[in-house]
Image 1 (cartoon, one colour):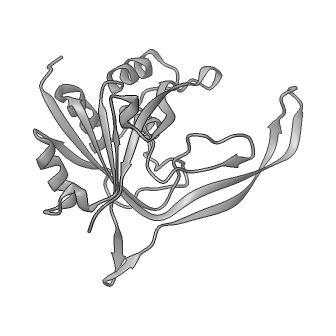
Image 2 (cartoon, rainbow, N blue to C red; image 1 turned 90 degrees about the vertical axis):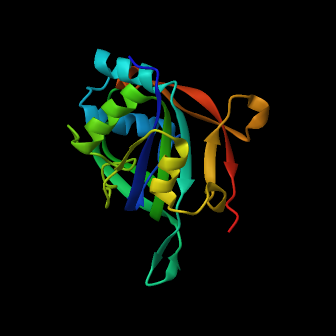
Length: 223
């Protein structure tokens, strides 16, 4: 595999998005930025890798070294800013199983979503692997969702693969510099970060889901 670097630019836009990383039991929250695990899962779906399969394991291993930058992109309607809101939805799920294996008639959950959000994502790393991901995202084997199946993209997810970071950022942001936008960067040193997120996937297999932490910092945009 070539070691030439590349930058894969993605756009995540839709009426609803949900990026959970600490959801437990009846309450399924969402972060304010897309998670690394959700992006890895989206790419596995695009390539048609079965959950827990050897192919998924190989894709996640190649995904691990990629560096991820997430950018919140403001939206507007008729010249007016469109605020991002966090919504809570009430779900009932029938015939679920309890910890003892018994069947439960109805299970209630509360699920959170972001409404009217738009994000740009840069994945930086091996150019050959990024080209494979781009091919899958261009013509995905399975459906692509923005965190949950109810969250349908309203624009193509794939923007393109670029030879430089500057070109990839321009494809997402136009002539505005990154400093104008609130964005989240991964950091190499714990001291350089502000938060640790348990969203670096090792396995999506239902019986052996495993995630490792990653260290990030969020930079507020300056208009």
